[in-house]
Length: 205
View 1 (cartoon, rainbow, N blue to C red):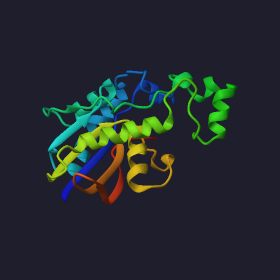
View 2 (cartoon, one colour):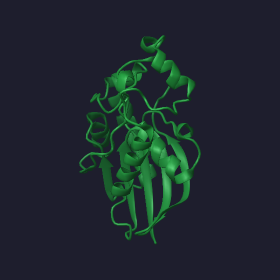
View 3 (spheres, helix red, strand yellow):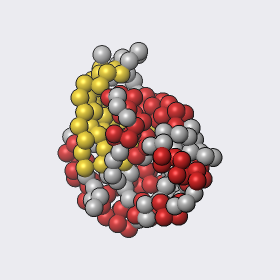
View 4 (cartoon, helix red, strand yellow):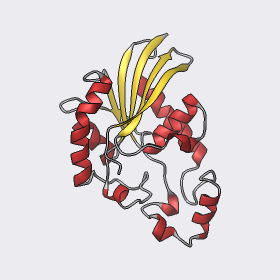
């Protein structure tokens, strides 16, 4: 089996993040000024985690992940994976708790602990499978030892960690520029999680 060190990194802060909005697949936001500054400060922390430039850097098609990858790994190209996007928040997209207060569908979703599908959005099961499919694509050749950095969305990280480590989807919530460092072994049939730890390279106060 091959050994792969994988760093899952949530993108930097956007204006929607600052306003506590549900920023999903439909919202192609760039990093805010604060998000850019935080990503620049986080670059040295991430470099220590990866041991320099990773063998492969993967990101999704939305601006906030690509922009974060460019700041964290300057002068390094990245592999674009279409499925590395956040979930579609449906009728909640772009709104925050204050704006959704009193919305019957939103209250039902909150009461379910986020387990029910979002009205007009992407089914949770579909999103989890899509995220894990993207993760497997990011790993590349399962017979090759590598360090892989994946700059993606909080939901992608939650989905991947739930599939690999068990537990609940919401056990793995991360702030901007936070994520997980994984040690894995892979072959053509399986991905074994050997160890993992959470890191925080952002300013999520």
